[in-house]
Amino acid sequence: MNNQPFMTLEQMDDAANAIRSRTKHQPKIALILGSGLGGLADSVQNADIIPYQDLPHWPTSTVWGHAGRLVIGELENQVVLVMQGRVHFYEGYSMSQVTFPVRVLQRLGIEILIVTNAAGAINPNYVPGDLMLITDNLNLIGMMGFNPLVGPNLDELGVRFPDMSQAYDRALSELARQSARERGILLHEGVYVGLSGPSFEGPADLRFLRAVGSDAVGMSTVPEVIVARHGGIRVLGISGISNKANLDGNTPTSHEEVLEAGQVMVPKLETILRGVLQKL
Image (cartoon, rainbow, N blue to C red; front, side):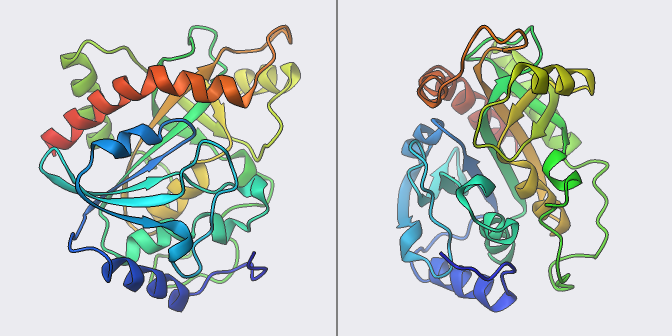
């Protein structure tokens, strides 16, 4: 594991060039698939597949349910790059390493990033298997000093103080709403809060997060979105609700449950994302 906390432009370009050398495709759209949601990558046609361990400097996932490979090909007549699995801060990587793949996407010329995750319900109206369009996020890890933009700012990538007032692109969100409506899929809308993990939240944590306006909680996504926006990439975010709100402490949560819920969510998520790709 690389102990260097801040990844360099040279390392980003090394990885980007390694990807270019192994695919004929030139994607403008990328998808990051979270825990249990990797099945969507199987639908990509004419795919070039690159395991993460084949890429220089690329962090590899240690978590069950994250395949750890790039799938680059065609989906709904769009050229897409799919990240099947991601790494997390709780695995011991620096924030710069966690978000390194998004930087590489930026260097590859990606213009739209679709992020997905498995998230726990905070909103009591959500049930496992539901989907939530992320309209905003609460950057709790960043507020605690672990913002992925901490450290030297690389001016080639973005400005020192980027605006996050519209982190999730409104036009892309509208396409997701239309896609869900046309296909009769319930799509909640709400605020995703990013915590470090890896322990699941206790009842007091969840009551606090509910009180400050959060609807779903997870251990990823927010750092990726911040870095994408810093680099001028438009973002669409959708959470798959994997477990019910445990506000009273009577319903324990397990990673197995999260992965099982993924089997219910993937078909719905795939249907919505195919609709978005058709509309782009």
